[in-house]
Amino acid sequence: MSADSRKPLTAVLTVRNFRRYLLGQLTSNIGTWMQRAAQDLLVLHLTGNSGSAVGLVTALQFLPQTLFGLTGGVLADRYPKRRLLLLTQTAMAAQSLLLGLLTVTGSINLLSVYALAFALGTATAVDGPARNTYISELVAREGVATAVSLNSAQFNVARILGPALAGLTVAAFGVGPVFLLNAASYLAVLYGLIAIHTDDPADPVPPPSGRTVLRDAFRDIASTRDLCLPICLVAVVGTFGLNFQVTISLVAVKVFHSGAAAFGCLSAAYAVGSLVGAIHGARSGKTPTVRRLTTTTVVFGVLEAALGLMPGYGAFMALLVPTGFAAVTVTTTANALTQLHADPRLRGRVMSVYFLVLLGGTPVGAPLVGLVSDAVGARFSLLLGGVVSASSALALPALLTGRIRLPAVASRRRAGLRVGHCGRRGAANAPWPTGCRRGTCVAVPRTIDPSQPTVGPGRDRG
Image (cartoon, rainbow, N blue to C red; front, side):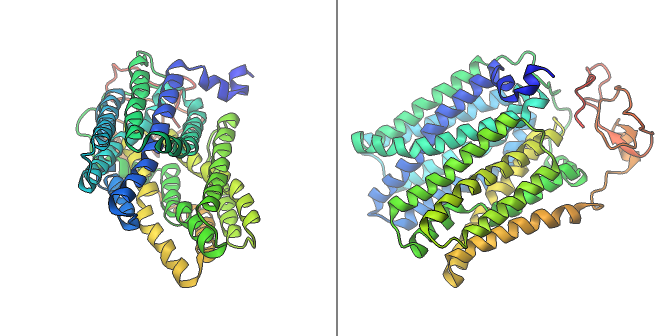
């Protein structure tokens, strides 16, 4: 066994292009979380502490994910991802710079904050699919799971550091400089993207031929169990289980009758658990499987339901750490599983569907959690989320078994695809997998053009 196989974390971090990308994203995300906290403070200042105004600006920032997230997936498959990221990151930097200049000069008003929040959300929606799928082009296939976990780890580090740094900066210099610092933080990610050399990427994807349409991604998801299951599971868990910003605050106020400081400690406990879970996933480097995803989702559901039964504040906070660990394990496993089983030519569109169901369920789940809390108590909202999450992990695999059907053999042949019986995907001219008989399944080629290189030994995408 090689040293790289024994130490997947070290193997991925030795990839210079990925290391540059990761450091740039970490710097930029810290600035982004600083801006989120400062933006809420700015809106409160402009409106005289209006909670509804803060909710509206948050909704405007996340609404574009629902409106334009799938379009971002189409663009990620149609154009080079690095070029697209340079454009979207520049647009986000310009938004932060304009918001900062308007604030420090005293020209800011509530309508400007709303408009700029929507603009930032639009750029983020287009940026998301390309940013997440670009990881698969920077590392080898066997390092994708580790790279996804590291990306999740840097996000959680930023989520912990960003609001704290924002509070210190606002106390010392005011709100405006926070936005300017965030604008400057984009220089790190832009430099990282410019410095990345992708002349020989780990898994080169051919330029798309013909139209780049969403229905190809939905067809691939519907016909591939290892894509359909994580996306369906994340849709359920994202809607009902991953609403901790709402449930933690409700339990802190309504059950334990505590204030903002206690709520902050609970949020920090959950964030620490998430960070440890992401680092553990990166260190283990295990290839994600459907069984691991369903098992960790059941564990997460049980832990969330148990949170609703915790009698005291200390026990509740202690259990939040393993719950955060399990939650990030579920999302990183589902993310890596989806990226590994998506056809590289469709990966941007498939991942846009993944993030739509992961984030798009929040506008439905968060109000539902609030209604349940008002009707039967804050504890029951956690019990409901945990039971639904665990039950979906147990039921969905059985429901999907036998319901996923590949397209007709004749249509595959018309598309220039090789047909066998094993269900594995491979190159058009690669050797047939052991035991494969022609006529009963499909092996998808990297490209239909026979002059293009095919997948070599050990690089089969199935």
